Image 1 (cartoon, rainbow, N blue to C red):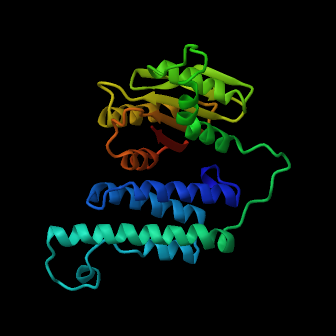
Image 2 (image 1 turned 120 degrees about the vertical axis):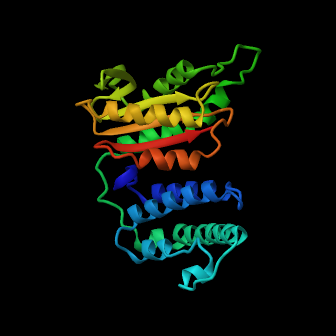
Image 3 (image 1 turned 180 degrees about the vertical axis):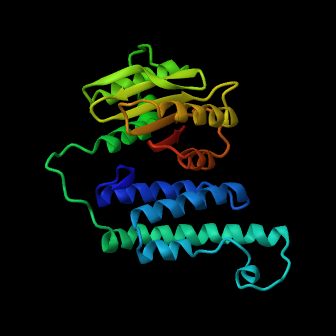
Length: 268
């Protein structure tokens, strides 16, 4: 299954994350709503390819009724904003129904693997997803011992590598990531046996949403030249919430044309 989803439990967790991010969007945030809508529609189509579930979800309208019905009636900005907010509410309700009913009724799990270990991509995504919780645990210690504090990107790499070692034996760090137009980059980690590259970013002064987007698009193109990988996971740690619209950033990066299977996670 795409996106490293192989069980109904994983599908439910995936949908629950979409719902949580949708609920966090302001009803007046039209751009953020549209980015979330594109991602949600794409994800539902991936989970239920060619099925009624995805068709019905895709049919949810985010435009004023009169325009939707073909009438040539002008609409005010307020009408469009209200339609976006209504579309978001309807989509969240639809995802809730998919989560509570359709996963069990219509989603078929792939043939179970003999190994009880989670699929490699799922393990990587789980480590990245839980990273903030791990950091919170490490930031407080009893008996006045010095706690581990994440100050920069190198600290993120340090902790993430230790967490990855729970699941993977061969973790190569600072692997050459390929060259494009004379410039080259080094990817943070390569899981050689699993053929997965992992790039780590942490926001800071001078590296916000806009700068990250430009930098990562270049990196993706360079990493395509890496001959020992099929997938790229980009983990962005944003503890100060410098990224205003993480949903749009994730959607835009994952839509990048690439031979690599791309997954992007932003966590705070």
